[in-house]
Image 1 (cartoon, rainbow over the protein chains, first blue to last red):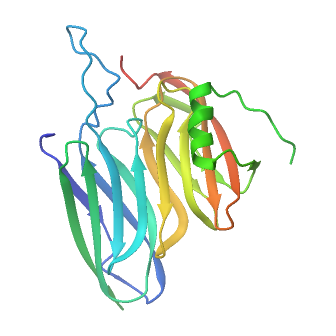
Image 2 (cartoon, rainbow over the protein chains, first blue to last red):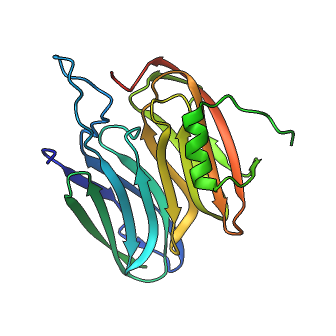
Length: 109
Length: 121
């Protein structure tokens, strides 16, 4: 399992009903590509976050497939429509089977 | 607009064909923002967007494995735009292919000059 994996998200505190808001997400992760070799010339196995999803009140916002070409500490920025007050759930899926989640509430007003 | 043949490697062609199912891909209708010059290929900022897209695939045609990411937009997606940071092994064309709600495909490409390649090895 990758060490010190920590998700971070930036979500506005509030929005108007129906407004589209900008969401920024980042998770600290080495995203080992599988292309590198160690000092002995042995390949370093691939270990990446391979999928990221965001849902709001259970409804899908975005579902992203990530390949090894995504940089270390994968950053994803996108927009979501906020029809009512509720909660965003962000989920990252690791090659090693680990699943990381973060939640953020947003108000209408 | 005129069809411009692209220089892409066979692996990139395969990735594109797997996404499109071999359907025709029209030029235009996709926004792809990438720097003209990236000093560090380990972290190159990229933004893609296409109004009405259900999914957008990002391909680095000159990387050892060309697939980069595929963004699937859900019911609550706002503008169909996404930004991320990617690795580029060297100077190459980055390609974005959008699948539209009607099942058609659209494409944009951008050449990025890379000073220091970002795939290790």
